Amino acid sequence: CIEIISYIFLVKEISALEIIKDIILIDTVHPFGWYMQCLFIWYISFYFSSLLEQRKQGLKYWGLFMTSLLLFI
Image (cartoon, rainbow, N blue to C red; front, side, top):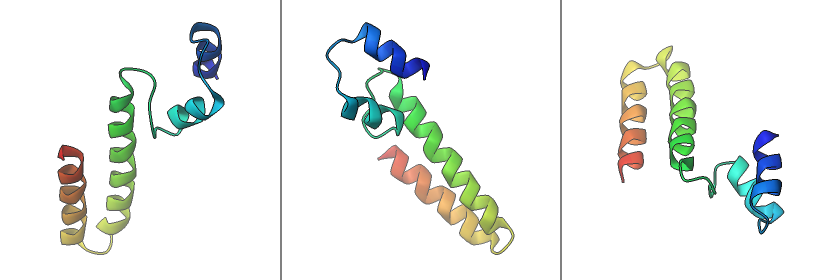
């Protein structure tokens, strides 16, 4: 909510589509938005790896390796 209000008052020429893209971390407006994108991807990755931890240990590490490889590229 604070981000939306600050965009409306500080950045006058921003569309609703740009605000939505920024909130769901597709195309960030803020210069440090890349950090939020990376953090969000790691949260999702560790959630799925915790689900896989109960089943197969090797698959868990393979998934984390692929996530880190994709983030590096």
